[in-house]
Image (cartoon, rainbow, N blue to C red; front, side):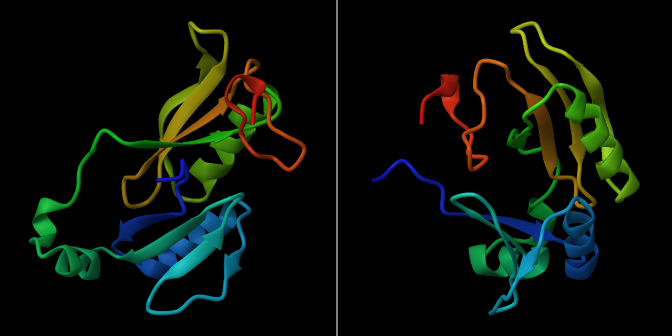
Length: 143
């Protein structure tokens, strides 16, 4: 198996509300099919799909999906000063700030928010893992 995540699918309660949230963060919706709203990322795609349809597809009761699953998504920025600006943007778009921008023990700077469906995002600046010229994350500066 190649080391790659191709598609991240988020089960959401209201497709248009969730799409509007990510659009307000500055992402561009791409032409979608099969009931998915998609946003192409650098090297992956984020897909929004009805939570009830996802539960049906998995063969589980929709009530068994939800709450903090122990997974967070991270979006790294080029500059420390951008972290609080982005968190404000997420809050203004309808997100909930879970942790305000602050320095981290390992030398970075980050904060957390949840989207309208409770999916948790970390917004970070990691001075030890600068973004590549195309914006791709590079662990320890190596791609």
